[in-house]
Image (cartoon, rainbow, N blue to C red):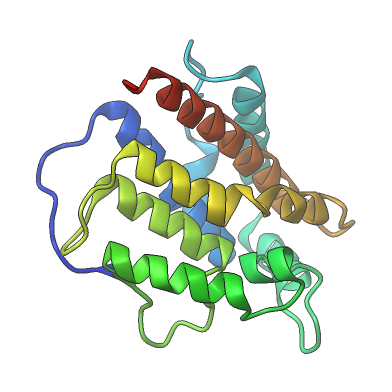
Length: 213
């Protein structure tokens, strides 16, 4: 995903943290992490604070613990077993498939139109379509941070995108991942991503209630 425009003012720390987590999701859901990324994740601090949920803290701790135990080759094998196949992969993390039952259907067309309005375009040479979970997380990151040619979006706009294109199907995808016997690291990632999305949804609702009528 790529944008054209800029946003120069620094983000509030909470918004930067949200953007950083979306960046992590975009990286981990598109390809298996290398050894350097696993080591960095294993050394990550707790995210515990009064503003986060116990479920989010616990899921993060499990992901960090898993990153410190598994090696990169094992995670690569797991990623391939889950998401890569000469036939039909065990897991296809695409919104269109979960929302319509088929890949490249109307949900993808609607998403593309919305991304165009936001100034976001698919990077040339990328095999995955824009409704892949990783691409949607990258879109959320760019809506938070802005980029060259991409304006930062208001929370209300982020909420609409999140609810329509991510929350509407992702929990079922995470359940499918967790049901796979070969899922180890990616089970922990699914649990943490789901916990993060729950906190996001709750925060969006609180913001909506606080908006002046």
